[in-house]
Length: 273
Ligand SMILES: O=C(O)CCC(=O)C(=O)O
Ligand SMILES: [Fe+2]
Image (cartoon, rainbow, N blue to C red):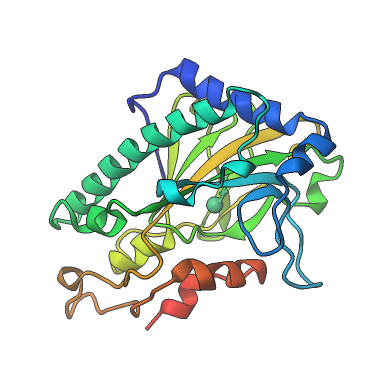
């Protein structure tokens, strides 16, 4: 996990992105329900997906929208209110796409691989889905979690945090550490796919979101993934006798990811050799 500043987005623009998010979630329930997610879709407004009676539900509301490739956009789920929503989201997605490509390039370089190793995987048809998260306050924060512990099933995830209210925490060893708020930064989370590709050199951290007793919190998470059919496995150059291969080849990772997620398990365990 690291935070990126000096990206091309101004503080004012990031505030605008946070503002449309707050305005959407502040709408009356009946208005938000116009964008309700259908049972077999991931796009739309709603809560945690329910897979089983046993599952612990996350204390959050969310709006999940695909932004890339453009063909994946389902505009019927893009809020009409506030009226700047679509314009701002379109701009934000464009800016994030540039940041994503830069970060993937820098990461491959730091592994001494060819520049385009990760970016070829993400490529022109790479998927970016944005989840707008809204965490209402809860008088008994000890009893709930905004998001249960998980790692992301992505290459990387770009998170815009709330400017005032903390909540995101990362697990290192046995301890949870708070992610500090850096108002104008994007927080970059390494996902499971980069852990697999880098043969474990980059780690995909487990994180969760805790709830504030008095204040609501928002965040936006942009999940960057290759097309589902692409084969993901450790780069040959990162496998040798001193560093044995840790992961099998996976395809269609987002499919198995959600199944594991709902059971509170990590999908990456299924990919271990
Ligand atoms: O709310 C946050 O800060 C993090 C969100 C997150 O981890 C996710 O949506 O996967
Ligand atoms: Fe996450």
